[in-house]
Length: 334
Ligand code: NAP
Image 1 (cartoon, rainbow, N blue to C red):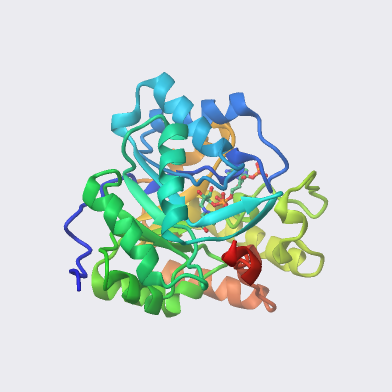
Image 2: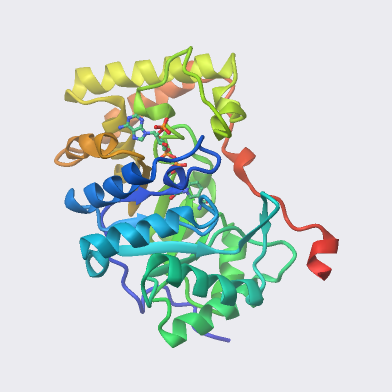
């Protein structure tokens, strides 16, 4: 039995993290590599010291672009790189693989793509129902003891899965979906994190762009953009979410002179979340970062926001559509 500690490693990073899923291009209608590198550099220049990425984002593309941007900028030492393991892809399909062999292979690929010899935070991307959590944890612990990774995270884990993981290895960071429209973790992961003093990274901070304020009823997504099948972006529901965004934007302007984008990010931080992961593809998208700091949402404002959401979104839906499948039994055997 190993210690359950979550505190022997201290993770210090900015409260806004750059998310790089869309920079990877896959499931986001492609990417512009030059813009991606400029965005990563702009993030660092604007004081963002946390970059969240994963091998599966563009099947290596996002990690490569992060590695390139940080190397060209000489910024590696100033940035906390949070990457992940535990997903596999074959013939364009993604599925879960938390086997020790997969973790050992992935870390080497990530180090090479990121042009670094250590990973600040290594996160298990999704729990794998075909591999006991304890086995995945033991593989992560070996990397941690070696110093290849400096902190361990788990993403999309339930409190029970986190407990099992922590019976074998420490967990330093949790990563879960969380934004104004997707609040499922308030019932389980957030109370657990609070009880155990664990930092939480909130992903999908802008609900895949819905909370940016840019979306219109006739906004079109092209290529393989996942928003073509995201249930929030489908007729009827999309209208509800757009009306909620408009009402939140009015509230943000009237009460604070801010936009809905700033409100959405500020709200996450004022819920006690350690860092909000903001997926941006261009330096311009990061420009409003200054609007997020220097003010707070009090309890009254949060109550007003809850009222707006309850009145307008009568048919809410969560982010479950994004969960990758487990491997089928045949693939496990191979
Ligand atoms: P997000 O941050 O909610 O939204 C990203 C999208 O918002 C961008 O692609 C862009 O859309 C739009 N956007 C951003 N800034 C904008 C601005 N100023 N104006 C207009 N539009 C703007 O979604 P996300 O990228 O899914 O989540 C953030 C990060 O969390 C990811 O990049 C990834 O690092 C992490 N994540 C982790 C998991 C996990 O399983 N652990 C799952 C999902 C995400 P356009 O493409 O339309 O320009």
